[in-house]
Each structure stands twice: as C-alpha cells, then as structure tokens.
Image 1 (tube, helix red, strand yellow):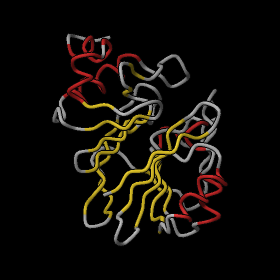
Image 2 (tube, one colour):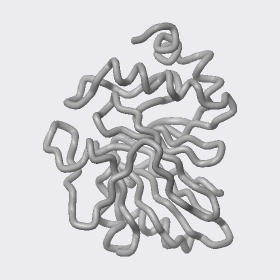
Image 3 (cartoon, helix red, strand yellow):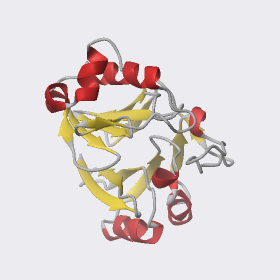
Length: 204
C-alpha cells in the first residue's frame, strides 16, 4: 500500500492518498481544502477513489469533500455520526443523502486488506483513527509531540486521555500519520510526548 501526504489549506491539514500501485484503488483521508489541487493530484496518479474517509468534521479536514464528490461520484463518504450535521464552532460538515457513518470496530475493505476504525473522541465527539496494516491515520487525536485541542465545542479532555491510552497500546513500530505536521511512531511518542505519557500515567 502506498501513502501520499499532501498538506492543504492555510492551516496545512494533511490529506492522505492511500492506494494500491497495481490496481490504483484508493482511499482519500481528510480532503480538507484546495479541492481542485487535490483532485488534480488524484487524477494525475490515475487513482480510482473508492472512499472519502474523514477523521472528524472540522472545517480544515472536510473542505474538499464536495470537489471529490463531483469528480468521483461513486466514492463512498464516511464520517462518525458524532461529527455530522452540527453547526458548532469549527465544525462545518453537514450530512447529505448517501452519507455513510462508521464507528468503533468497523472495517472497510481496500485492495485485499482492510481499514480498521477506532473511535477516539476527545478533540471532537466523533473523532476516529484509521488503522491500516502498520499505519495509523490519527487525525487530530495524536500528533508528534502533542495531541489535539480539547477546548472546541465537543472536545473532552477525559475522553482524549482515554483515547491516547488506547493508541499507546498499539505496537510500538506503528507509524502515525497525523492530521497536521510530520509523521511519527507510537514508540517515539511513548518516549517523547508529554501528553501521551501523562495520559498513560493516570490521566491528563
């Protein structure tokens, strides 16, 4: 499986293309902004976009959904129901006919493998992480040396603490692809991330 990261928008949210180089079947994770540019990048690779997968509903992670739906009308769009159809600050995603909801334990087939869904509330009520083989797409739950904010509407520091502990239990070699900034690993974050360490030691 190939992973291509394209930061998008003025906040620089990471959009990920996850695809098979042979079949070109693909999932697009968090198409947040710059819709024309992201769609053009997908087209240039010849991707057959099967899924649009959203880790949460904040504006910087969903802004290009419309552009991808126009370009790939057969692609299935997934979000956790907790982040759909809300007008809370920073949450600009609105449900539409044909929208799919995923939750803890769901698995989506892709290229002979599967994408496992983990419910990881804290940054928002409906935040999820997506686990594929040895890769974790952590949205705004876990960052290199940091974690997602919990002071937006729908944020919950106790829920975030529990979500971080859950992620800390993944194999240490798991590579983490966050919603902003650079990639990391579970091992590194267990050593270096004071928020993750604090959560593991009894809570934030």
